[in-house]
Image (cartoon, rainbow, N blue to C red):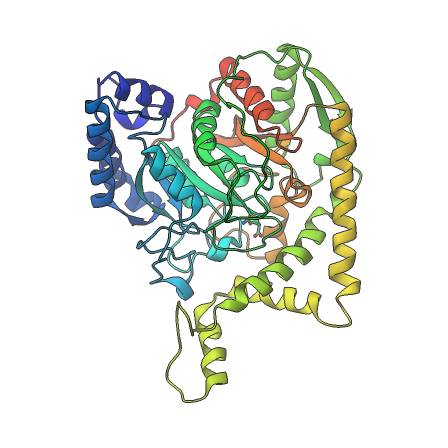
Length: 485
Ligand code: GLN
């Protein structure tokens, strides 16, 4: 039998239900794997061994008693450390929240718990989800399992690396401008950014509230669908969650994409794209055509404004959201003074890292009187143009395809210019601005490093992009390859 940590969620679920394996065995296999490779990869900020074994044991009791179980019962998952877990540290990769134990669970955690999933631990990330490499984590950098000298991408780099290295069967991440899709691309896993409103944000520590969404990582589209199924749907605690019904995401995965209209946005082949990435993705598109899809060109003319617009709106919202870290209610607190203002200032000076401060300053500037109209309001107008680009494109096409990232995994320390780092998200940011969904799936290799194929879907068309992703996996083997560790 193959090692248990190499099973897919679907396979392991079937074996659990048939009582061929137990969740305790499966969970232990993952904890062993973490022990074996995580000192190299450094995906986890916290491993919750005891909790995991307890949950696994409970799952096994349900199987033994013939109780109702779900596709995730007994399945060990990892959680990005930006998602609140009751009584369990939720650091957001920041010194500000190094010892923060939320008094409540995020809605997605309540749902995973109700589904019987097992939590292995919390995963590393760029501080407050600001970054594309995990190098902005206040604690340590996560290494890419495909090449330990390279970045796993970010900000959900820990979740992507954990799934890629077999340390978790799946994971949750958050995507504000690409933080699920880009690390998925760089680590050769599936990463799904859900439609804005599809998954509750209650208990997701806010970065940019109009852009943030939680979504799954997995090693196959079907597994991603199983996780999405458990976490999607309306939530009274998040007024931006959509009342729209949740389809059966697995039901649609039939391998058939004949006649599906696939658009290739001409603006998504910018100069900075590495030739190896372009080559792999062009070959993927050819494959989709051979599978019976109708492939055509499409234009999203406002794409070039995506990054600049995002870097006004996201920091503006971040500057407001992060105002709550004042050292009074929770989090790090500078106490070595009797002056309230000095305490506030020092709390933020020592509690936040450089990139977070840069964003707060950018955002505060963009929102300040006199500049608000010129920057923030203008950016919101251009944002609607970007959304209209998608609306128009989805009148003619069911799915749009592009590279998920312009480059394969870059060396740690290689990108020191913040603007260059921001450009890592050129292909992912527009979908966040529009609020539509997107997925990155293993799309080939360039010089031995993974290339991510991005499939963009219309609002609430997760079922469609998952169907294409699953169909693509049936005729390729990229997603089945493992890094050597
Ligand atoms: N890399 C982008 C940023 O730094 C996106 C991050 C994210 O999606 N959370 O803002």
